Length: 298
Ligand code: CAA
Figure 1 (cartoon, protein in one colour):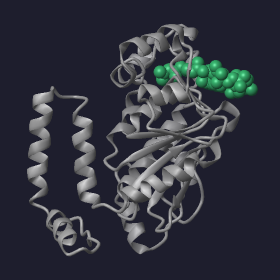
Figure 2 (cartoon, protein in one colour):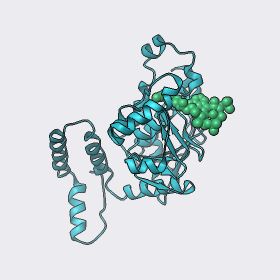
Figure 3 (cartoon, protein in one colour):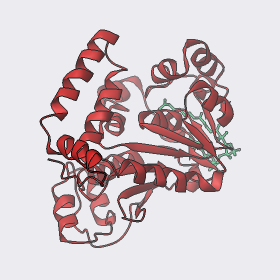
């Protein structure tokens, strides 16, 4: 166990509501906790939100550095996402920052002394992709700056809700480098080549309104309501079968990887697969009987 993970184990403690949660948490992938009684991560706050406490809320918490994404934060985030992903009581996860900054990018001060051999040899940023590997829906609730790695982190999420004060940018060019966690790739796929080029070549951010127009975010709200709206969205998703939600997320994500024909085939296969589940039969039966479905994720 590395030193940072070892020290994390002492710090990383989250609230557990019942015995089944304990089992879920203990069996979570990559979990290094030894004490799951009650406390916090060094760089994150964790809560369970919503009427049924079925939305996991992760708040980035390095206020003095505008939530700059250092190694410790990204390690904690990967671990925390894994815990929620494996917790059966959680339907969706919301990731947020502060009113001033979702995240101002990778930690520049941590990067200054790094050299090619370290970053290439050590696979710098490779573990960031964990965020996009979470199987449950992850919603970014963005206020303030979402810059560089912060914008990339938001784009790794499935849905972005933004406050009217949010700004999104890839300013790496201004500090002599380029995006390293998807800023040139995901941005181009989402907002198109012209705006992606403008963002990556000037480093200038776009407003929440422009992000909405370009399809980078799906809705904007007054800043103080963004997190609540994201939690409500998580609750709405949570009304559906957890098993089928995983399928729907996988299908949409494949649209970014496959040609249209391959994607349509993949979607149809997954649609056929849903007929192997009890939840598909239950959903259609409940509709015809004019009652709410009773999902079993089977
Ligand atoms: N890394 C480390 N520290 C950062 C930081 C970052 N990315 N962004 C802000 N901070 C720190 C500042 O150094 C400052 O700390 P001190 O008080 O100790 O000096 C504190 O946060 C507050 O920042 P400012 O005083 O600059 O606040 P501001 O309101 O005047 O400006 C800002 C806000 C426009 C976001 C400005 O801080 C800024 O431009 N930050 C850098 C943004 C950036 O370049 N991000 C890309 C990083 S590279 C990257 O992300 C690569 C990748 O693809 C993964």
